[in-house]
Length: 362
Image 1 (cartoon, rainbow, N blue to C red):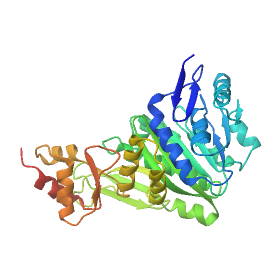
Image 2 (image 1 turned 60 degrees about the vertical axis):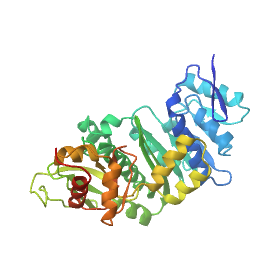
Image 3 (image 1 turned 90 degrees about the vertical axis):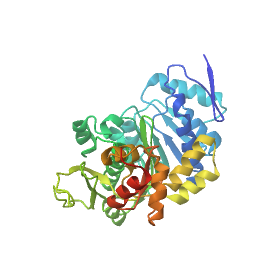
Image 4 (image 1 turned 120 degrees about the vertical axis):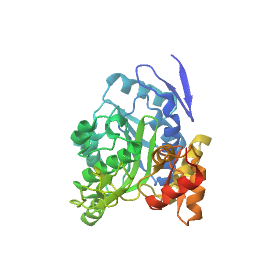
């Protein structure tokens, strides 16, 4: 049986799933726990598999009070062996999230949930395991659903209508945040996003729960509806539980495509990201943190190839367009969602003008 080394952990895979491509995400998760760690923090890895995440939390983030569970009996056995292999004394259980929630309500200050597919079926029970100040780390790998390839499934699972265009990754991440906030509110928790990531085949949110009716109501006020005009690229957003958006674009009078409910508040906390950068583990994780720290915290972004095609101009670097926008006084940054895209607070007219100025007619 092959021994794999990741970070400070040594693991045997055996009958448990291990994805080496997710090592950078685990790096960032370790950095996150180091940034938010409190004394004697109780941590739950609710989808343990080999146990590599939880073992790294104990060895690298200094969180010794870690519980690992996995519904798969063979995976739980592998995790137990790996905990012993690394000289740790962590609690490992062959248990479901639902089973644990029935016995241990309000037991953890940090909860990591990284399932195959959607986290939605377990979100209710995860909230039972949380209390005031709990940090949730939630992963969704059903990105085809969240990105609109299966719109019906997204409506059924998350209660939101997705976007199915170049903006789908950000819309999907905001749908995941909305679902988390909506579920948390049922338990009188408000939600504060600390970090939100969309990369490869996954979306992952790091949020802090704050108890209180006023907190949960304030959180829900950050949810709302979006609409997109595919003809003139105009976006509209309206916060609230029952927002009113007209069916036609206010500029070109074309029919707009509604999507949501989505999260319209901030998707990250720069102080948390700054602390994570100080505890950097790898160059790749550092580069990702730099991008997330820099990224303008507004919905949504623009894809330069889509803009040049729409306007009939030659291909142009997104940096050239960003430079033109900066000359107008607009704020503009790179975005995690598209290597050829950018975020800006400029109007769509200013964006179009900058694309035209940076390129030339075909």
